[in-house]
Image 1: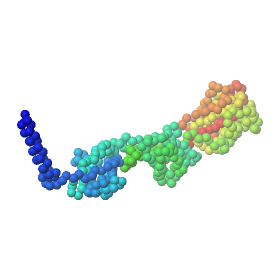
Image 2 (image 1 turned 45 degrees about the horizontal axis):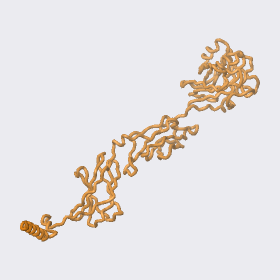
Image 3 (image 1 turned 30 degrees about the horizontal axis):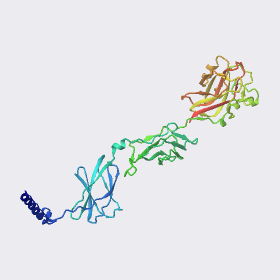
Image 4 (image 1 turned 30 degrees about the vertical axis):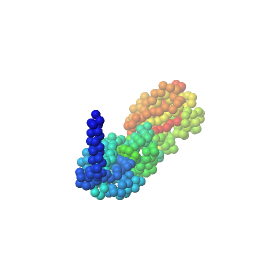
Length: 408
């Protein structure tokens, strides 16, 4: 047994001696005498997505032997070379790769020295490239549909456009409009601003808007929404007729006031709410119902829309009446009394238009809106024919105010 142990110890010692006699660089015979060198790798990579392109940056390798970098993608079928302009890790090497597809890429960056040795790769994952699919998903910033705009003057040249809060990726919205000189203008609305005022808008023209977005904060490119949207038609709503232009138009058989201070002119003195005597129109009682009076609005309106009728604070308020209109009273005077059965036919034959027949179920005191519809002809003169009052009185009628509105 001792002999056998000695034999194996001798064999092990011989192998150890032979192994120790091998030189450290004997492997070079397999590399043609050249030592494998790996240039230093890059650090702190970052990506900036863009429109069919991407920006890639990194902190350069501190290895002074590095002369260039090469970026590979598409299973290393595509690549781009970037010069090593610095070896200071606090600097940045940056390049933009274009002609890409809308896709999420993985890039591999290698460092190279002058002899062509390359480093181990640095992998950059999830490098997003945006394109038309992303653009098609974008929508223009929403407008405030409750009040999309507000007209600020009678000419319609000053308007405020109202938006809602945009998406967080919205960068800007451009509003395009025609100004008073027929020049197309553009103004910007920033995300933190919900309205913009135009002071030179040409009333009756369109206002368009288009929003721009960045998919991420450091994106190379800003994407516009594919479609340009248009604000709802900008027009005045119902505008009050100018009472300063109103006057009495006495025609045959018109009812007269109870006394001078209760004339028809009280109906456009600007009072608000039901008034008491004498701040009212009060008929004198010498004409039986139905009776009528006539007024001149001072100019013809081709879009008269409504009238608010406010009664007296107590009594004789009309509950059944007709509102008539005409553009010109030349040869329009009726000869029959208002309570004559033939009066209506005569009025129609003279060119008067029956704008509305009104029947109220209340006491006629509170303000009451009468809608004329949207197809009214041109109207300047108004005739109100009272048929019944709340008190059932047969000859008196009282009113506080008439306020007419038109579509501007």
